Length: 258
Image 1 (cartoon, rainbow, N blue to C red):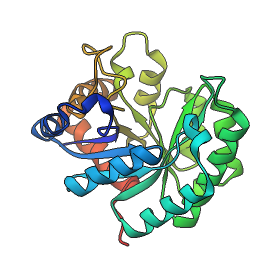
Image 2: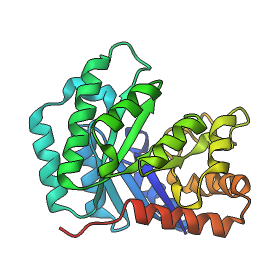
Image 3: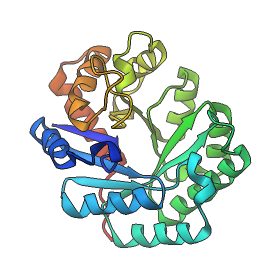
Image 4: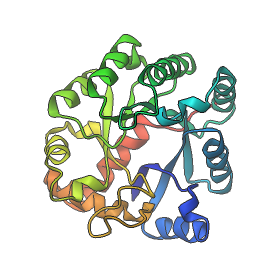
């Protein structure tokens, strides 16, 4: 049984066949998906999926590339949703993304700090997005005591040294399609070295489809392909990889009592 710890099944790319994509995941032994809402529209869509499917849970937060649309009223709204729905298992995806110059770094950092504080207040873990911002991400995590709640480094692509720091802060690392790519040496090396209880799997669907589907629309059913690659890297059989990854996901991102 697989758990996809990070997907965007509300995405417009599934507009014509969303139900079929979700059914295909279930029929391919994916029995838990955490759908991630990262702005007003996607949070609302994520909550509709949670209402429609009892095996889809949610993480909600404001993505660093969307911080130009966020205000304190959205933080109040997220807090209210978390307090009333135990199937919201994390605040996220939040963090830093320095890949685009039109998303000011200072504003990203401000809302990253604000959302870590919100997670600490609500006592829920966080899901961190980090792209081209390794040093600042770690600095803010340490400065804002993110280790108080822990959580997941989404689609981890950092070095072993960064992985070690994240582990020391109580975070787990999640891996997706890139571990199936020939040129993705670093995430493969990191996954192979991690303690057994600190790794999990994701698709980030519809993005980052694994080989041999690279460049096409990803979906949660492909988690099994990612899992096969993880099993090879970890030196275990596929059922063992599925069991460990799922157990880790349930421990780090459990449903909550509200």
